[in-house]
Amino acid sequence: MTYTEKGQIHCPTATEDVMSKTRIYATSTEALADINDGATIMCGGFGGAGYPHNLISGLADRKVKGLTVVANNAGHEALFAYGGVRKVVCSYPLGPTSKGFLEVLDRGEAELELEPQGTLVERIRTAGAGLGGFLTQVGLGTELVAGKPLIDLDGKQYAVCKPIMADFALIKAWKADQAGNLIYRHAARNFNSVMAMAAPIVIVEVSEIIDGYLDPDSIHTSGAFVDRLVEVGK
Amino acid sequence: MKDGTDFNLWSMKEVGAKVAHDVQDSWMINVGVGLPQVAVEPLTNRGVTLHSENGIVGLGPSPAPGLEDPEVIDAGKGFATIVAGGSFIDSATSFVLIRGGRLDLALMGAYEVSIAGDLANWRLSGKKIAGIGGAADLAHGARRVWIITSLFANDGASKLVAHCRHPLTASGVVKRVYTEYGIFEPSGDAFTVIELARGVIASDLIEVGVPLSKI
Image 1 (cartoon, rainbow over the protein chains, first blue to last red):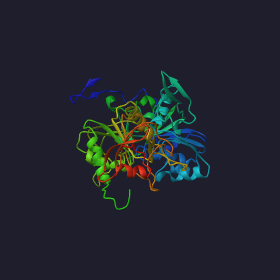
Image 2 (cartoon, rainbow over the protein chains, first blue to last red):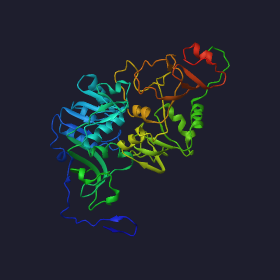
Image 3 (cartoon, helix red, strand yellow):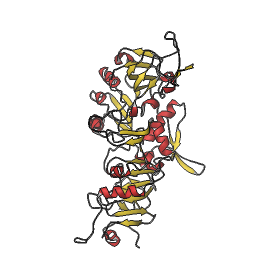
């Protein structure tokens, strides 16, 4: 590595023969081809910020059914439109984009697992971290820990939270390089960088895939976690 | 309150100013969606850091028209800005900050607060579906939980209660409640009056069901 005069680390990597498992796909449809009925998917975003719209509509085009969708919100309108979702795991299933979910929920066609936002994201994080779960005091004394085992440790009570496993993570990033390294933009990072570490197959829609490589010091998610990239433009 | 009594309730803008007055300049604060937003303007240029649980440390004011960015939103999903010195963080880190005790204050709304400091602010009993969002994490994790609310619900019932009827967000966490009638603190067996708006008489509030301690 050499330092440029601006003080940034410059990493001259060969453009051929890069050590990367990341593959670049031409279309969302191709990148999603092996997501089948009954799959559990994580979906990044907080409301519309960082939400992988193109991947979700690509999934809807394939009419995949029986999905469990883990996300902060329940605004997966394209999937509800054809009854593709069996279960939603989220912290906030209300708001203008959740109409479709509330309708299928009302008809008994989907179920809801509600988690406090911090518990939700930590269950996702621990899944990716290879842990068996974690202990929290959030929600103690409320219905929010209903169904969770309670334990005493060093004189304090905790609820036991299990990791949330998924088959695929569908996320949105701003920039990617040829090795799958990712940078998110502004407050669109939210659940994306956590979910990028939490599923065995991570599929990323990205505004721009650059020809070379990003500054290694600027990377938010290492290409080590990224399996598939689709460039979707701004 | 009895009709014709000469009293002058605070406007919610004044309630926001009362809250801001009691905040220390160095605090990191999460301001909830809805009514608590009245405190944002009087907190501006005070040196406080606003936190938004979707991943902003140093939340700024709403953007000028034409400068809205769909990737800079606050926890209420409204367009926002970030101040100089601010940072974007991921959701896991954001809740590390909350649960880990870095947040000096969570300002929240309420359906009910009990004399024990229990907070109900996410789901009305009888309502099947509601969103919890970050409320339970904030109520548990912040070093202080202060509430901004109207003292009475739409049906006239006091929101300060002996026991909450609505499902709890967190138990025993509320330190202070700011209302248009005054400022109150749960003390275990009642609410202690910290300050009352001009002309408001504690015994009148007790008479209509507000569980204040008798002075």
